[in-house]
Length: 173
Image 1 (cartoon, rainbow, N blue to C red):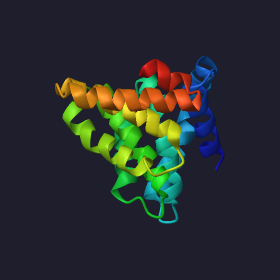
Image 2 (image 1 turned 120 degrees about the horizontal axis):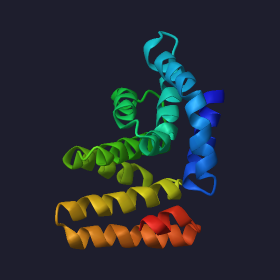
Image 3 (image 1 turned 90 degrees about the vertical axis):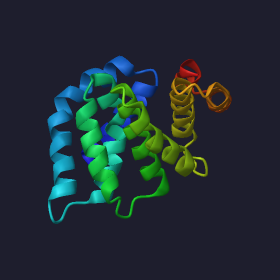
Image 4 (image 1 turned 60 degrees about the vertical axis):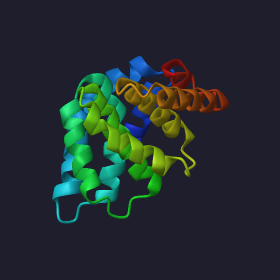
């Protein structure tokens, strides 16, 4: 569980005020994270739920460090069988997958995971992840020239981010 705690702290730092510190700390632990993910998904006694949560928490690091394909691979593996994962865990994994696919320029492929993330997170307590899903889905549908829909989701992101005092989400909106 140490890797999971590290990943959650890193994610919070990347989305908050400790971006540089978080991005500098993660490379030293990246191989340990890989081993934890491999164990979760490939060992008979592996904990798939823990692996899914770890993969979702690593999404921001993979996004900003440029490990897009690796992240897509782990998240796809995690989402193939989410085991006993919570709605929030699965929603966050879909969000991370969608963000990584967007980064790779795979816009059509990113649409389904982004829509699933919104569907799962809208009724959850994870409002920050929902704000990120809204802003990135708004940007995505703008690429498809669905400007009214894009504006609607960007406004939702801005309103929610403002209510949460979530600077990262407000800047992205």
